[in-house]
View (spheres, rainbow, N blue to C red):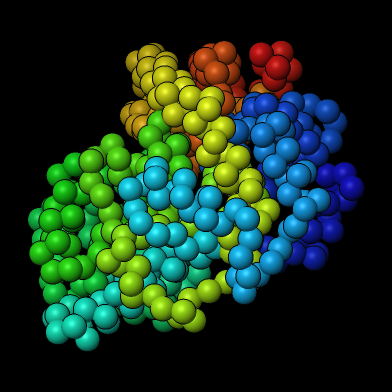
Length: 416
Ligand SMILES: *Cc1c(COP(=O)(O)O)cnc(C)c1O
Protein backbone atom coordinates (compact mmCIF):
# COMPACT_ATOMS: atom_id res chain seq x y z
CA UNK A 1 0.00 0.00 0.00
CA UNK A 2 1.57 3.28 -1.06
CA UNK A 3 0.64 6.81 -0.02
CA UNK A 4 -1.57 7.61 -3.02
CA UNK A 5 -3.64 4.44 -2.62
CA UNK A 6 -3.93 4.93 1.14
CA UNK A 7 -5.08 8.51 0.63
CA UNK A 8 -7.69 7.58 -1.98
CA UNK A 9 -9.07 4.65 -0.01
CA UNK A 10 -9.08 6.36 3.38
CA UNK A 11 -10.92 9.33 1.92
CA UNK A 12 -13.78 6.96 1.08
CA UNK A 13 -13.54 4.49 3.94
CA UNK A 14 -12.66 6.41 7.10
CA UNK A 15 -14.61 8.92 9.13
CA UNK A 16 -12.91 12.17 8.28
CA UNK A 17 -11.59 12.96 11.77
CA UNK A 18 -7.96 13.58 10.80
CA UNK A 19 -6.08 15.78 8.40
CA UNK A 20 -3.02 13.58 8.02
CA UNK A 21 0.28 14.80 6.67
CA UNK A 22 0.92 13.24 3.26
CA UNK A 23 3.51 10.76 4.49
CA UNK A 24 3.31 7.00 4.92
CA UNK A 25 5.75 5.52 7.42
CA UNK A 26 6.76 1.90 7.22
CA UNK A 27 9.43 1.53 9.91
CA UNK A 28 11.44 3.31 12.54
CA UNK A 29 14.86 3.15 14.21
CA UNK A 30 16.33 5.15 17.09
CA UNK A 31 14.72 8.62 16.81
CA UNK A 32 13.94 8.31 13.11
CA UNK A 33 10.83 7.26 11.21
CA UNK A 34 11.32 5.88 7.69
CA UNK A 35 8.81 6.49 4.90
CA UNK A 36 7.84 4.21 2.01
CA UNK A 37 10.68 5.62 -0.10
CA UNK A 38 13.30 4.87 2.53
CA UNK A 39 13.66 8.50 3.63
CA UNK A 40 14.41 9.05 7.34
CA UNK A 41 12.58 11.69 9.37
CA UNK A 42 13.97 13.00 12.65
CA UNK A 43 11.04 12.60 15.02
CA UNK A 44 10.73 15.43 17.55
CA UNK A 45 7.13 14.51 18.38
CA UNK A 46 7.35 10.73 19.04
CA UNK A 47 3.77 10.09 17.96
CA UNK A 48 2.46 12.79 20.35
CA UNK A 49 4.66 11.90 23.28
CA UNK A 50 4.31 8.13 23.01
CA UNK A 51 7.52 6.57 21.66
CA UNK A 52 9.61 7.47 24.70
CA UNK A 53 12.45 5.09 23.88
CA UNK A 54 12.30 5.91 20.18
CA UNK A 55 11.82 3.13 17.65
CA UNK A 56 13.09 -0.43 17.81
CA UNK A 57 14.60 -0.13 21.28
CA UNK A 58 15.87 -3.65 22.11
CA UNK A 59 14.26 -3.62 25.58
CA UNK A 60 10.85 -2.95 24.04
CA UNK A 61 11.11 -5.38 21.14
CA UNK A 62 12.42 -8.10 23.46
CA UNK A 63 9.53 -7.62 25.90
CA UNK A 64 7.00 -7.74 23.06
CA UNK A 65 8.61 -10.78 21.48
CA UNK A 66 8.87 -12.77 24.70
CA UNK A 67 5.41 -11.91 25.99
CA UNK A 68 3.70 -12.40 22.62
CA UNK A 69 4.91 -16.00 22.60
CA UNK A 70 3.90 -16.54 26.21
CA UNK A 71 0.46 -14.93 26.66
CA UNK A 72 -1.37 -11.92 25.19
CA UNK A 73 -4.61 -11.71 27.14
CA UNK A 74 -6.28 -13.12 30.22
CA UNK A 75 -9.07 -10.57 31.01
CA UNK A 76 -9.35 -9.21 34.52
CA UNK A 77 -11.16 -12.35 35.66
CA UNK A 78 -7.74 -13.88 36.36
CA UNK A 79 -4.29 -13.01 37.66
CA UNK A 80 -1.24 -12.83 35.42
CA UNK A 81 2.45 -12.45 36.18
CA UNK A 82 3.01 -8.77 35.49
CA UNK A 83 0.20 -6.67 37.02
CA UNK A 84 1.55 -6.49 40.55
CA UNK A 85 5.13 -5.96 39.37
CA UNK A 86 4.16 -2.97 37.27
CA UNK A 87 1.88 -1.59 39.98
CA UNK A 88 4.76 -1.81 42.44
CA UNK A 89 6.98 0.24 40.15
CA UNK A 90 4.27 2.85 39.45
CA UNK A 91 3.37 3.34 43.11
CA UNK A 92 7.07 3.68 43.96
CA UNK A 93 7.76 6.37 41.38
CA UNK A 94 4.52 8.30 42.01
CA UNK A 95 4.16 8.20 45.79
CA UNK A 96 0.55 7.06 45.32
CA UNK A 97 -0.86 3.84 46.76
CA UNK A 98 -2.95 1.99 44.19
CA UNK A 99 -3.30 1.56 40.43
CA UNK A 100 -6.13 0.94 37.99
CA UNK A 101 -4.98 -0.08 34.50
CA UNK A 102 -6.75 0.75 31.24
CA UNK A 103 -5.92 1.28 27.55
CA UNK A 104 -5.68 4.98 26.82
CA UNK A 105 -5.44 8.44 28.28
CA UNK A 106 -9.08 9.32 28.14
CA UNK A 107 -10.01 6.06 29.85
CA UNK A 108 -7.60 6.81 32.67
CA UNK A 109 -9.13 10.27 33.01
CA UNK A 110 -12.68 8.84 33.00
CA UNK A 111 -11.62 6.51 35.81
CA UNK A 112 -10.30 9.54 37.73
CA UNK A 113 -13.56 11.46 37.29
CA UNK A 114 -15.62 8.45 38.32
CA UNK A 115 -13.43 7.80 41.36
CA UNK A 116 -13.75 11.46 42.40
CA UNK A 117 -17.55 11.30 42.17
CA UNK A 118 -17.65 7.96 43.99
CA UNK A 119 -15.33 9.28 46.69
CA UNK A 120 -17.54 12.33 47.28
CA UNK A 121 -20.56 10.03 47.51
CA UNK A 122 -18.71 7.91 50.07
CA UNK A 123 -17.88 11.03 52.10
CA UNK A 124 -21.55 12.04 52.03
CA UNK A 125 -22.56 8.65 53.44
CA UNK A 126 -20.02 9.34 56.19
CA UNK A 127 -21.77 12.60 57.02
CA UNK A 128 -19.55 15.08 55.12
CA UNK A 129 -20.99 17.94 53.18
CA UNK A 130 -19.42 17.71 49.71
CA UNK A 131 -20.96 18.12 46.26
CA UNK A 132 -20.50 16.56 42.83
CA UNK A 133 -19.05 19.41 40.77
CA UNK A 134 -15.61 19.66 39.16
CA UNK A 135 -13.32 22.59 38.58
CA UNK A 136 -11.16 22.36 35.46
CA UNK A 137 -8.83 24.92 33.90
CA UNK A 138 -9.16 27.08 30.86
CA UNK A 139 -7.16 25.65 27.91
CA UNK A 140 -7.25 22.19 29.51
CA UNK A 141 -7.29 18.96 27.51
CA UNK A 142 -8.30 15.67 29.14
CA UNK A 143 -9.41 13.46 26.23
CA UNK A 144 -12.30 12.67 23.91
CA UNK A 145 -14.85 10.59 25.80
CA UNK A 146 -17.93 12.28 27.27
CA UNK A 147 -16.55 12.88 30.77
CA UNK A 148 -13.16 13.91 29.45
CA UNK A 149 -14.60 16.40 26.96
CA UNK A 150 -16.77 17.86 29.74
CA UNK A 151 -13.56 18.82 31.57
CA UNK A 152 -11.82 19.92 28.35
CA UNK A 153 -12.01 23.65 27.79
CA UNK A 154 -11.79 24.08 24.02
CA UNK A 155 -15.25 24.75 22.59
CA UNK A 156 -14.76 22.64 19.46
CA UNK A 157 -13.87 19.53 21.49
CA UNK A 158 -16.83 19.87 23.87
CA UNK A 159 -19.82 21.80 22.59
CA UNK A 160 -20.74 19.80 19.45
CA UNK A 161 -21.48 16.91 21.84
CA UNK A 162 -23.64 18.80 24.31
CA UNK A 163 -25.10 17.94 26.69
CA UNK A 164 -21.84 16.51 28.03
CA UNK A 165 -21.41 15.43 31.65
CA UNK A 166 -22.87 18.29 33.69
CA UNK A 167 -21.22 19.88 36.70
CA UNK A 168 -17.97 21.39 35.42
CA UNK A 169 -16.80 25.00 35.84
CA UNK A 170 -13.67 26.41 34.24
CA UNK A 171 -11.13 28.50 36.15
CA UNK A 172 -8.92 31.09 34.44
CA UNK A 173 -5.43 29.61 34.03
CA UNK A 174 -3.14 30.29 37.01
CA UNK A 175 -5.67 32.74 38.45
CA UNK A 176 -5.71 31.99 42.18
CA UNK A 177 -8.43 34.54 42.86
CA UNK A 178 -10.75 32.90 40.30
CA UNK A 179 -9.95 29.48 41.76
CA UNK A 180 -10.82 30.60 45.29
CA UNK A 181 -14.00 32.31 44.07
CA UNK A 182 -15.23 29.22 42.23
CA UNK A 183 -14.27 26.68 44.91
CA UNK A 184 -16.87 25.61 47.48
CA UNK A 185 -18.14 22.49 49.22
CA UNK A 186 -20.04 21.81 45.98
CA UNK A 187 -16.71 20.75 44.41
CA UNK A 188 -15.65 17.10 44.53
CA UNK A 189 -12.37 17.58 42.62
CA UNK A 190 -10.04 20.08 40.97
CA UNK A 191 -8.58 18.95 37.62
CA UNK A 192 -5.09 20.11 36.67
CA UNK A 193 -2.52 19.28 34.01
CA UNK A 194 0.67 20.30 35.85
CA UNK A 195 2.02 21.32 32.44
CA UNK A 196 -0.76 21.85 29.89
CA UNK A 197 0.11 20.03 26.69
CA UNK A 198 -2.50 20.48 23.98
CA UNK A 199 -3.22 23.93 25.43
CA UNK A 200 0.27 25.08 24.39
CA UNK A 201 2.92 23.85 26.91
CA UNK A 202 1.94 26.01 29.87
CA UNK A 203 3.14 24.98 33.35
CA UNK A 204 0.80 25.87 36.21
CA UNK A 205 2.29 28.24 38.74
CA UNK A 206 3.55 27.00 42.09
CA UNK A 207 1.14 29.36 43.79
CA UNK A 208 -1.87 28.10 41.83
CA UNK A 209 -1.07 24.42 42.33
CA UNK A 210 -0.49 25.00 46.07
CA UNK A 211 -3.77 26.90 46.38
CA UNK A 212 -5.62 24.02 44.68
CA UNK A 213 -4.02 21.53 47.10
CA UNK A 214 -4.94 23.68 50.09
CA UNK A 215 -8.56 24.19 48.94
CA UNK A 216 -9.03 20.45 48.39
CA UNK A 217 -7.60 19.70 51.84
CA UNK A 218 -10.06 22.13 53.41
CA UNK A 219 -13.12 20.13 52.28
CA UNK A 220 -11.96 16.59 51.39
CA UNK A 221 -12.21 17.28 47.66
CA UNK A 222 -9.62 15.51 45.50
CA UNK A 223 -6.78 17.03 43.52
CA UNK A 224 -6.57 15.33 40.10
CA UNK A 225 -3.31 15.66 38.16
CA UNK A 226 -3.58 14.69 34.49
CA UNK A 227 -0.03 13.59 33.64
CA UNK A 228 -0.94 11.80 30.43
CA UNK A 229 1.34 14.11 28.42
CA UNK A 230 3.71 15.58 31.03
CA UNK A 231 4.16 12.46 33.18
CA UNK A 232 6.23 9.29 33.12
CA UNK A 233 9.62 10.94 32.69
CA UNK A 234 8.79 13.48 29.98
CA UNK A 235 9.91 16.47 32.07
CA UNK A 236 12.99 14.86 33.61
CA UNK A 237 11.10 13.72 36.70
CA UNK A 238 8.71 10.82 36.80
CA UNK A 239 5.76 13.16 37.29
CA UNK A 240 5.20 16.82 36.54
CA UNK A 241 3.78 17.42 40.04
CA UNK A 242 7.15 16.39 41.51
CA UNK A 243 8.62 19.66 40.20
CA UNK A 244 6.15 21.47 42.45
CA UNK A 245 6.51 19.21 45.47
CA UNK A 246 2.75 18.81 45.54
CA UNK A 247 1.15 15.40 45.85
CA UNK A 248 -2.19 14.91 44.06
CA UNK A 249 -4.84 12.44 45.27
CA UNK A 250 -5.18 10.95 41.81
CA UNK A 251 -2.97 11.05 38.73
CA UNK A 252 -3.37 9.64 35.24
CA UNK A 253 -0.69 8.44 32.81
CA UNK A 254 -0.86 6.92 29.34
CA UNK A 255 0.99 8.17 26.25
CA UNK A 256 4.57 6.87 26.85
CA UNK A 257 3.61 4.25 29.44
CA UNK A 258 4.00 1.20 27.20
CA UNK A 259 6.04 2.89 24.48
CA UNK A 260 3.47 2.52 21.67
CA UNK A 261 1.45 -0.43 22.97
CA UNK A 262 -1.81 1.26 24.06
CA UNK A 263 -1.99 1.55 27.84
CA UNK A 264 -3.24 3.94 30.49
CA UNK A 265 -3.28 3.96 34.26
CA UNK A 266 -4.94 5.85 37.08
CA UNK A 267 -3.02 6.05 40.34
CA UNK A 268 -4.71 7.03 43.58
CA UNK A 269 -4.21 7.40 47.31
CA UNK A 270 -5.52 4.77 49.69
CA UNK A 271 -8.14 7.28 50.84
CA UNK A 272 -9.53 7.88 47.33
CA UNK A 273 -9.20 4.22 46.29
CA UNK A 274 -11.58 2.94 48.96
CA UNK A 275 -14.48 4.48 46.98
CA UNK A 276 -14.21 1.78 44.28
CA UNK A 277 -15.50 -1.67 45.26
CA UNK A 278 -15.61 -4.76 43.03
CA UNK A 279 -17.78 -4.29 39.96
CA UNK A 280 -17.97 -0.49 40.12
CA UNK A 281 -15.42 0.01 37.33
CA UNK A 282 -13.60 -2.24 34.90
CA UNK A 283 -12.21 -2.98 31.45
CA UNK A 284 -11.80 -6.02 29.22
CA UNK A 285 -8.31 -5.28 27.89
CA UNK A 286 -6.85 -2.99 30.54
CA UNK A 287 -3.64 -4.10 32.24
CA UNK A 288 -3.17 -7.14 30.01
CA UNK A 289 0.04 -9.20 30.07
CA UNK A 290 1.56 -7.70 26.92
CA UNK A 291 1.07 -4.04 27.86
CA UNK A 292 2.24 -4.66 31.44
CA UNK A 293 5.35 -6.55 30.32
CA UNK A 294 6.31 -3.73 27.96
CA UNK A 295 5.64 -1.01 30.54
CA UNK A 296 7.85 -2.82 33.06
CA UNK A 297 10.62 -2.93 30.45
CA UNK A 298 10.20 0.80 29.86
CA UNK A 299 10.32 1.78 33.54
CA UNK A 300 13.39 -0.40 34.02
CA UNK A 301 15.11 1.02 30.93
CA UNK A 302 14.43 4.62 31.96
CA UNK A 303 16.04 3.76 35.30
CA UNK A 304 18.95 1.64 34.07
CA UNK A 305 19.89 4.06 31.28
CA UNK A 306 19.60 7.11 33.55
CA UNK A 307 17.10 8.65 31.16
CA UNK A 308 15.51 11.07 33.64
CA UNK A 309 18.86 12.85 34.00
CA UNK A 310 19.37 12.60 30.25
CA UNK A 311 15.94 14.16 29.60
CA UNK A 312 16.74 17.03 31.99
CA UNK A 313 20.14 17.70 30.42
CA UNK A 314 19.02 17.35 26.81
CA UNK A 315 15.87 19.36 27.54
CA UNK A 316 17.88 22.17 29.15
CA UNK A 317 20.26 22.21 26.20
CA UNK A 318 17.36 22.20 23.72
CA UNK A 319 15.63 25.07 25.53
CA UNK A 320 18.88 27.03 25.79
CA UNK A 321 19.47 26.65 22.06
CA UNK A 322 15.86 27.62 21.31
CA UNK A 323 16.26 30.79 23.44
CA UNK A 324 19.39 31.67 21.50
CA UNK A 325 17.41 31.11 18.30
CA UNK A 326 14.60 33.29 19.66
CA UNK A 327 17.10 36.08 20.32
CA UNK A 328 17.95 36.02 16.59
CA UNK A 329 14.39 35.74 15.27
CA UNK A 330 11.65 38.11 16.45
CA UNK A 331 8.99 35.70 15.18
CA UNK A 332 9.68 33.49 18.23
CA UNK A 333 8.06 35.31 21.12
CA UNK A 334 8.55 32.76 23.91
CA UNK A 335 10.20 29.42 24.73
CA UNK A 336 8.51 27.35 27.45
CA UNK A 337 8.75 23.88 28.90
CA UNK A 338 10.29 21.38 31.25
CA UNK A 339 12.65 18.61 30.21
CA UNK A 340 11.70 17.33 26.76
CA UNK A 341 8.24 18.91 26.81
CA UNK A 342 8.88 22.16 24.99
CA UNK A 343 6.82 24.76 23.17
CA UNK A 344 7.85 27.85 21.25
CA UNK A 345 5.34 30.60 20.79
CA UNK A 346 5.25 31.98 17.24
CA UNK A 347 3.87 35.44 16.45
CA UNK A 348 1.06 34.14 14.21
CA UNK A 349 -0.88 30.93 13.47
CA UNK A 350 -0.10 31.14 9.78
CA UNK A 351 3.60 31.38 10.41
CA UNK A 352 3.57 28.49 12.91
CA UNK A 353 1.79 26.30 10.34
CA UNK A 354 4.30 27.23 7.63
CA UNK A 355 7.27 26.49 9.86
CA UNK A 356 5.92 23.06 10.84
CA UNK A 357 5.38 22.30 7.13
CA UNK A 358 8.84 23.55 6.19
CA UNK A 359 10.39 21.37 8.90
CA UNK A 360 8.54 18.36 7.51
CA UNK A 361 9.83 19.23 4.02
CA UNK A 362 13.29 19.03 5.58
CA UNK A 363 12.49 15.68 7.19
CA UNK A 364 11.94 16.83 10.77
CA UNK A 365 8.69 16.11 12.60
CA UNK A 366 7.12 18.46 15.14
CA UNK A 367 3.62 19.88 15.37
CA UNK A 368 1.60 23.00 15.98
CA UNK A 369 -0.79 23.11 18.89
CA UNK A 370 -3.00 25.79 20.37
CA UNK A 371 -2.78 27.83 17.13
CA UNK A 372 0.56 29.56 17.64
CA UNK A 373 2.73 27.04 19.50
CA UNK A 374 5.28 24.70 17.91
CA UNK A 375 5.47 21.65 20.14
CA UNK A 376 8.42 19.34 20.74
CA UNK A 377 7.84 16.00 22.51
CA UNK A 378 10.86 14.03 21.27
CA UNK A 379 11.87 10.54 22.41
CA UNK A 380 13.75 10.55 25.73
CA UNK A 381 16.78 9.10 23.93
CA UNK A 382 17.24 12.27 21.85
CA UNK A 383 20.86 13.53 21.86
CA UNK A 384 22.50 16.95 21.54
CA UNK A 385 23.43 16.08 17.96
CA UNK A 386 19.75 15.69 17.12
CA UNK A 387 19.01 18.99 18.86
CA UNK A 388 21.73 20.67 16.80
CA UNK A 389 20.17 19.39 13.57
CA UNK A 390 16.77 20.72 14.63
CA UNK A 391 18.14 24.13 15.66
CA UNK A 392 20.21 24.53 12.49
CA UNK A 393 17.19 23.68 10.35
CA UNK A 394 14.86 25.99 12.27
CA UNK A 395 17.43 28.76 11.92
CA UNK A 396 17.55 28.28 8.14
CA UNK A 397 13.78 28.27 7.92
CA UNK A 398 13.31 31.41 10.03
CA UNK A 399 16.05 33.13 8.06
CA UNK A 400 14.57 32.18 4.70
CA UNK A 401 10.99 32.86 5.75
CA UNK A 402 10.14 35.11 2.86
CA UNK A 403 11.02 32.42 0.31
CA UNK A 404 9.31 29.54 2.12
CA UNK A 405 7.13 28.69 -0.84
CA UNK A 406 10.19 27.45 -2.72
CA UNK A 407 11.57 25.34 0.14
CA UNK A 408 12.94 22.02 -1.05
CA UNK A 409 13.69 18.98 1.09
CA UNK A 410 17.30 19.02 2.25
CA UNK A 411 18.35 15.40 2.44
CA UNK A 412 21.60 15.98 4.32
CA UNK A 413 19.65 16.95 7.42
CA UNK A 414 17.83 13.68 7.76
CA UNK A 415 20.64 11.53 9.04
CA UNK A 416 22.61 14.23 10.76
C1 LIG B 1 -3.44 12.92 25.03
C2 LIG B 1 -4.03 13.39 26.31
C3 LIG B 1 -5.21 12.83 26.81
C4 LIG B 1 -6.00 11.79 26.04
O1 LIG B 1 -5.28 10.62 25.85
P1 LIG B 1 -5.79 9.56 24.73
O2 LIG B 1 -4.86 8.40 24.90
O3 LIG B 1 -5.70 10.23 23.40
O4 LIG B 1 -7.19 9.21 25.09
C5 LIG B 1 -5.67 13.29 28.02
N1 LIG B 1 -5.02 14.23 28.72
C6 LIG B 1 -3.87 14.78 28.28
C7 LIG B 1 -3.17 15.80 29.11
C8 LIG B 1 -3.35 14.39 27.05
O5 LIG B 1 -2.24 14.97 26.57
